[in-house]
Amino acid sequence: MKHTLGFAVVATLGASMALAEEVKPMAVSFADGTVAASLTGVAGDPVNGRAVFANRKQGNCLACHTNSDLSEESFHGEVGPPMDGVADRWSEAELRGIVSNSKMMFEGTIMPAFYIDSGYTRPLDDFAGQSILTAQQVEDVVAYLMTLKEE
Amino acid sequence: MKIAPWIAIAAFGFAGAAVAQDDNTLNVEGETLLTETAAPAHMDSVDTIYSGWRFRSSETQALQTDDFDNPGMIFVDTAIEQWDKVDGSEGKACSSCHEDVADFAGLRTKLPRVDNGELVTMENLINECRTDRMGAEAWKWSKGKMTAMTALIGLQSRGMAMDVATEGEAAPFWEKGKELYYTRVGQLDMACSNCHEDNYGVMIRADHLSQGQINGFPTYRLKNAKLNSIHGRFKGCMKNIRATPFAEGGDEFKALELYLASRGQGLSVETPSVRN
Image (cartoon, rainbow over all chains, first blue to last red; front, top):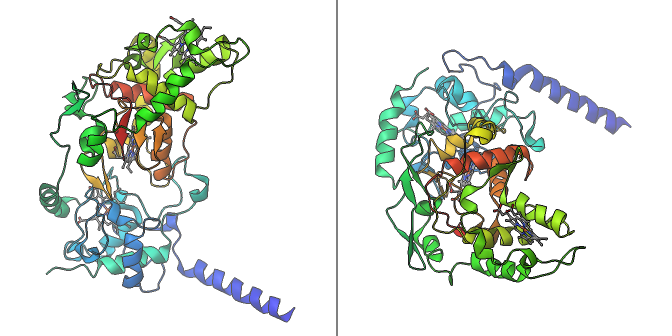
């Protein structure tokens, strides 16, 4: 009994913390395609971001972008520009905007919006109402992209 | 809206990559098939259309040049047997009424077409004979018996140019198919056109994007080692972008099939083609 109660309190606390700090997909505020503020308030983890970038079930960014930093992965797509030196070309706020919803930066782009949970039609049931990446995964990917410097 | 920075880099990247279709010529059993031709007038942003064969690896291409090597022909053989098999309450086989399957030469190039106000595909025509004329059960749209039979009948048109009607009675169906082709769907929010019109010739992860032509269907795919129907392929592409597919044999996919067939006008029928 005691245990259950304690557990419930922790769970509620966790949820309300997330509510307070995580920006929900449709609440992300864009200025000229960029997103200045972190979506979570928690610093992004570039190591996890690198994994999300390559993972076919998560970012799958490699489907469309080549990236020399991931040369151990065998197949790199060429639909979008190479990721090498991307942090030299874009600021963190711009990259956060591009990853969250690239359509705000590149009108009519094929690149999916990774942090929206509505506005698309006929999603498979398993994905309905969800964003492709979580807020923290977006932050992790942005932190990773910020490491891709050539200059 | 900021687009300048990546353009120069992208152009550089594309120039360096192995892009676009190859220059190979498809000879099947000594006959040259047309895998490239001028795009039909209705296509605004594409000048030349190419068969999907032109985007496959040379190993995969080679399998289609010789019927002995083409794994799809094994399934065609099963349809040749099926052709003479009595089935259903009327005690008939296909061959009871159709003297020679070769009489279907040219049919593939004209499908789908409008019959009595309805858009019909090869599968519809076959099942109509089975249910209405043989008293037999309809075959499932993408299952083995159906894909084998559509391959056998399609093969009779191999080398002939795709030539579907898009005007008159067909126009509303064609318009609907066109709309579907350009409509974004799924969690990834993409349209067929995003991949098969805007980006054919480039790699998407491990796949070399083609124009998504249907002149080779049903296709034998190395991936699943069987013949794949047109609608089955549409379904797969929709699932890949996390979209709920339309029903196989439903109005949406039939309309999309007509529209795609019209984007391949003039290409040779390749049935049964081999893809990865």
